Length: 223
Image (cartoon, rainbow, N blue to C red; front, side, top):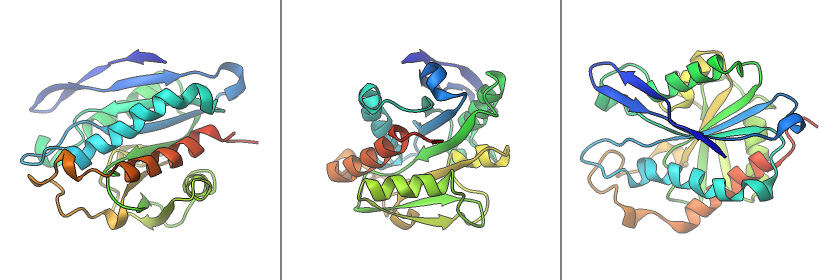
């Protein structure tokens, strides 16, 4: 993959950066793009294990599998900075908003089929898929749920309460299709707490989400 590390300003907090790994499939992709993203920051006193080293770990593992998976679309794996708006004091997820600008600047807005935020997926046998839409879209949530079924992992869709609270939010507000996969019902008792430690992560949970992501990016998206 080609890797770039674009930096950006965080209002009142200095700067941060995104790490973008780009896997290009050339003419086979027919001008389509898929994005998986996971934020790298955390909230004190939490140690950031489930929120969100778990999501970053899924993306890293997926990177080793891409040649075997042979995606049908160009794929970006993105580690985003400055997602935790409760810490940085913004009303939006800064790294994700900058990633939306990157998509536009690269001329890939019309190519984007979906963006999926992988956020807090290090525990459990079941997961939620959330988006702010009133119903699932066949090419977005429908495709993600189908990938989960092929992977034999229980994933249930639920509408966001409001406009969302992960990196997918900024894509949807910009009119771009996005969703988040997260812990069952979006609840972890150690969320943003000191007990969010590496020892709580469950290898089987991470493997389940890797299987879902592998099925999602490895399928031919448009025929």
